[in-house]
Image 1: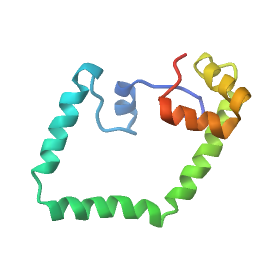
Image 2: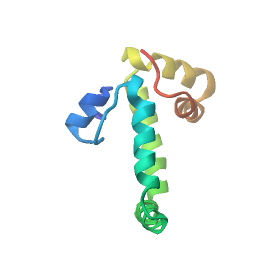
Image 3: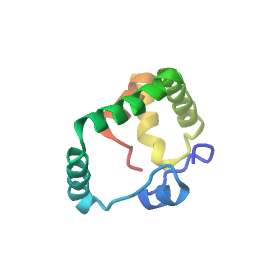
Image 4: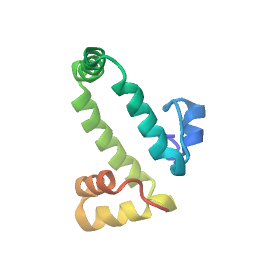
Amino acid sequence: MIILGQVVSGAEAVEIGPVNRAVPADRLVDKVEAVCRQIVSLPSKTVAMAKAGLNGAPDLRGYAKAIEHGEDIAIANAEANKSNPACLEFHKAIAEHGAKAALKMVRSQGPWKG
């Protein structure tokens, strides 16, 4: 996906492996609420320990640096994929506001629609 600059659907992401499930948009709220009910039913210390482990491990591995590096790669990838129709809005934002600002816009607005 990264090398080819491909955008994949939720179902494709499940098949490839970076996510464990995809839910249709019209069932998303119900699914999120069900997962939240499941988490809330667990002992709070269990959830706290799991959360500490999940949050701590990436930090020990330099997660913040990895995110920063990923941003740089995303900017470079977008620059290299100017011919990709799905990236046109992003390139317009880069031209108008700069690469870092365009990336912040992507984060706040979600993926660009091509």
